[in-house]
Amino acid sequence: MRKRQRKALYNVMFPLWMLIWFPSWLWFALIPANYLIDRAVLWWSLGNVDERQTFCRKHTWKICLAGFAADFVGSLLLLGAYLLFSSFNSGWAHDIVFSLGFNPFSNVVGFLVTAVAIALSGFCIYVLDLRIIQKAGLADTQARRSAILLAILTAPHLFLFPSGLLYQ
Image 1 (cartoon, rainbow, N blue to C red):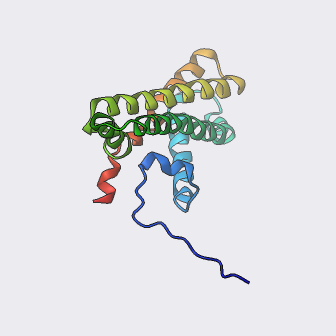
Image 2 (image 1 turned 135 degrees about the vertical axis):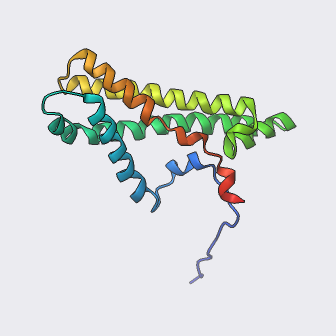
């Protein structure tokens, strides 16, 4: 019988936004933190709605899942742009790739792509949360207010974090 060879990757650097694609121990902290943030924003956005506590308990988990789905959409856009610009063999493309992967503030195009990814995720959060909240029976104006606050405050602003700081 042949011995199974073990392969290891050393010095692999991932952009922070790619970690969402790889289940790890980090998710054990990320999921509860995301849930608590979503719950706090939902609680705050509901204002004086009757049965606010019950509403939050019943629907925060759906809003949290919708937020993760929206984050995947935004990271998919970043991954697509990262791969697209990686296919070009030039200095300007390398600068954009570095910006997308490790420091969005180092290049205007990379920053704009990252901002569009955050806006796209925020839009997805708005649409999904609006549907969840309206289906739960809230009034249309209150549902829109809560959904817009959730979209703005829980969009993946961490996409702007310069991952390169972690690797220095």
